[in-house]
Image 1 (cartoon, helix red, strand yellow):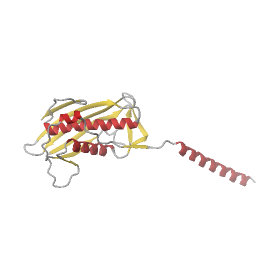
Image 2 (spheres, helix red, strand yellow):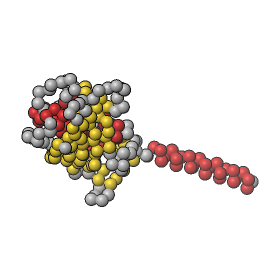
Image 3 (cartoon, one colour):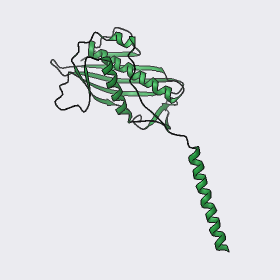
Image 4 (cartoon, one colour):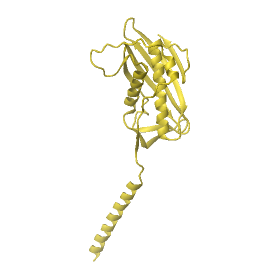
Length: 219
């Protein structure tokens, strides 16, 4: 009798644990995945660019991100020295790859007469310009501001070789949810791409309106 009761008790316990597990699965939030996207070229960005001469091949070699951002979870600011990792709001692809892809797509839109390549490019490709970008901040606070800070350089591979250095600091209201935040981040990448395109096309003259601020110099 005791053996049967023990078996029955064990069966009930097992069923109870299984039901608890199913209940936990039923109440767990669904994970949402987000993508960065190229943005339409607006009249402000277009006004920065001189008429295209065309025919250049531009290579995007490196896009560096802070280590704390290069993870599946979307990172948001919660204070001056604190961040939040969104377990159920994630990037659909590695953020470093997505940023490089979107900047390349934006430059293709902004410089339609030129050819834009992303590293690794086909062996033997002759580059006229090479772009290297170091993103130092790319996050936001839900309901607050979204910020993109980046240092970048454009290397001239044709004679005479030269290098142009820039520092872009861009910000915009982030919106109150992750979808709005990611849309804002896409727009900030569009503004960064426009500044780099202007540098490629015009030698980074600072005349004209800017979505943020830019500090460029020739070395």
